Length: 322
Image 1: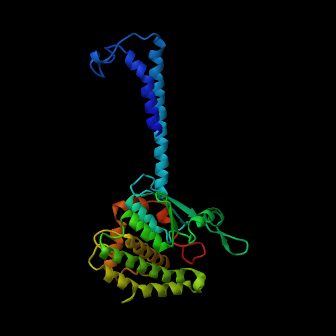
Image 2 (image 1 turned 135 degrees about the vertical axis):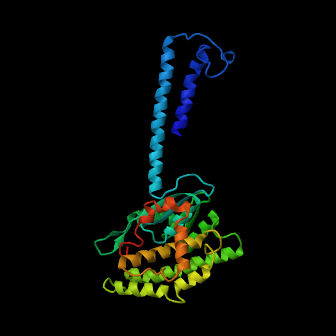
Image 3 (image 1 turned 180 degrees about the vertical axis):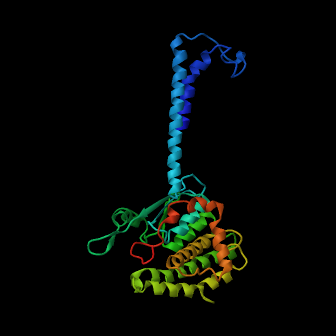
């Protein structure tokens, strides 16, 4: 905008000079017969206007460079600020991958403009955790718009709709972004994939967080057991592989909302196995391993994978595995 404004000013200020120039001076711009000619009343203007124009051009270049640097910083944070037919969104969640990662990937895949608003948990004196930016500042007004509000949430600034609850959020985004399949069969496959991925996440949460009784001392053994269980015959990974079959993605030839959630859970399990020095759960499931690599290589997602958002911890601060 600064560049356009400066150029406009340059044209306005340069108008008298162009109209006052002699035919020989205007030969580069067109036939002399098209250019009215008269001598300048004051020779000072012949110097002043070009000088002002040059100065404004330099200012415009500086403004454009600053805008480019700002856009680069937003991209590095994983924010896509370009306008798109999908509209503008605000996605709110903790400063982790967690349940926001599938939504971030969906938005990045479609190039949708969005604000990635994150909140940090801080330890409290009573031994608990607090997040004033969420609980005291942002949640109260959002709760007035949606009584179910929780993290993650999505604000669609185009329609004014506020969506909470993870699977509902993924499905809403899927409909807005055209990622719920192209027919009834693909929509059904997408919805089932989202639900199945969430089942795996619930199993994982019981291991990595202390809420279900997994202590820090028992975590290593619990993790090894969990990784063996998900990769076992007829278990989660086997069901995923059979549902995927020979399709490139879970609903068909193109990614849908469920693919991003499945990918995130597979990737988190790979990171857990690697951190513990345990075998990859994908080793015994080549079809699923190929899917994981296929989605990771999509050109539309490389900006996301290069961003800070993709390298956030998987889980929150009280988890045994971050």
